[in-house]
Length: 257
Image (cartoon, rainbow, N blue to C red):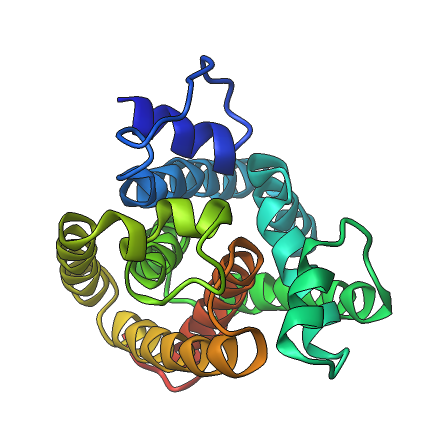
């Protein structure tokens, strides 16, 4: 229960009681990350149903959809996304890049990438509202935040940390061992079944994209930073959600169901 509270207090703005962190209750925090996403998925479905009932139009719906993601998470993952953009485009050594990740200030590349991210996110939601088959839309809205967090949970379990300290290492499989890694595999199997059953070919496209982005994150995190970190995990979540959005769009354009 304490691990669940830590997960929601860290990665959502839902009020939670204070919990003192210790070695035991931080071992399984990442396993509850998809549950954090499931609440966001339920809110997303509710937003789409309310927008349809009120007939507010696709552009306001898309803007509200993106705003919901930011409000619910408090922007914590976007912070990692921006920091990663600044660090990667500094073209410095691994140690200096890690220092940029730790810097609380945002640089020019972070601002530019955030702007592009929001443009693509809003455009993506508009296209999904237009092209996604009606019978798939609500399932799609629920599965995206859940599945992206399952991917991040799996990455934290299996990708090595850049440093043997910090938030990523505290939650990682490198520190917490086989139980976390085994549970992460079970979560990914559940994700695969859920995506394929509820979304068909759209779900298959999302899974293929997740496999590609996982190995890309593995390669660039080692080459550019010497391993993963909390900021890189935030980057991974952002590109997982955005990419899954466009995987759904591609399947819609292809006429797949």
